[in-house]
Image (cartoon, rainbow over all chains, first blue to last red; front, side):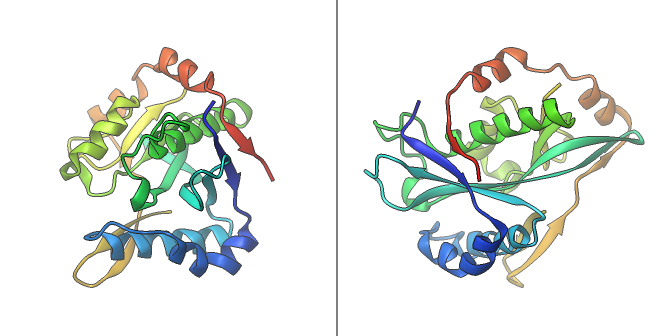
Length: 171
Length: 51
């Protein structure tokens, strides 16, 4: 087990602290405006309980602050007029300082741990309340090759040849 | 809610979950569940603090 801890943010903490949370992170030098805007909007959605945000921190305190977060919601995937429940990864964000880093005491990339958390949560939902798929839309689409390769390594597959949404079948 | 960002207008736009028909829909519905992978992930002990 890694030394990381996952903690769900309450709607009220997202409402009260969204600016502080956004300002606490460092961002990609080119995509920073985009990342900040999406993160702020995601926290606004979380304050209205339309998505749930979970943060990841290093419980050993060797690395200070929040390493990243993931926002999950539920929705319906419509396939040939069938409406199938799905868990949606609304946003997966890793602080720019920690991207692609594998810290010895953590043992995995932060993004990998956040995706493990999303998959475990989606599986729990699928067992307790029914959800057939975990779905996401990679930022940057197919042009972001390393990101797509990462999701493919986690068994996500593109829904169509437009290369937008990806899915992982849960049951 | 999933968003895209327009670099020119610097505005966000929400993206709807797709509605698929035909071969894509059939392929997704008939896809195999990656059971071994899911078991591997579920067996990983994560330190999760629930509210």
